[in-house]
Image (cartoon, rainbow, N blue to C red; front, side, top):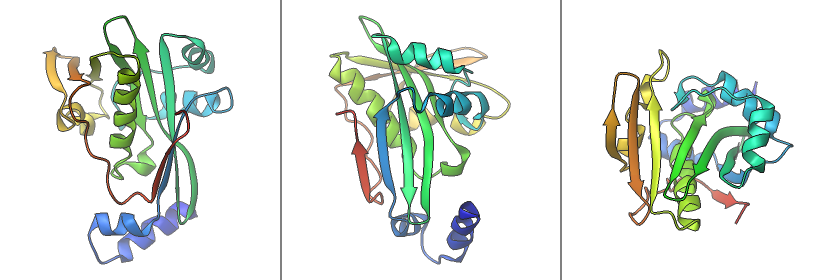
Length: 194
């Protein structure tokens, strides 16, 4: 019912999409995952297809392993707007080596595609790499039948193309570079793990 109200309200709004998003009073929360959100994160990894850069499928025990490891972070995004809470709508899993950070998983629920949350989440990934004094963060796009809309996600966000074959495109970003700007229409962005 709430999602129906959102769609109806958007159709009736006369201005630009950015102006409409400002009226939503969106509050974004980012946090590192714990056992409480593990089931939802696993569910998103198994069911999200459209905005999913690698479409890797993980179980709850897989997610718990990433959470417990010193060599990875699992961060999630929650969204609330004037219509109510949308819950966990985005996930990133970052793995670390001595030389670089690698974005293993990056996904958003189809309910929030287009709202700019992807930039907030990507900037958080880059900042986590910086916090570990890593100069490079890598990401990849694994092509599926359903995720074609995100093929240029990394290039749109100033990542450099490193390598490409018929199934995978690899990118990198130097963490000293300026990260992409966060949309100004968000009412508030809370990063709880800082």
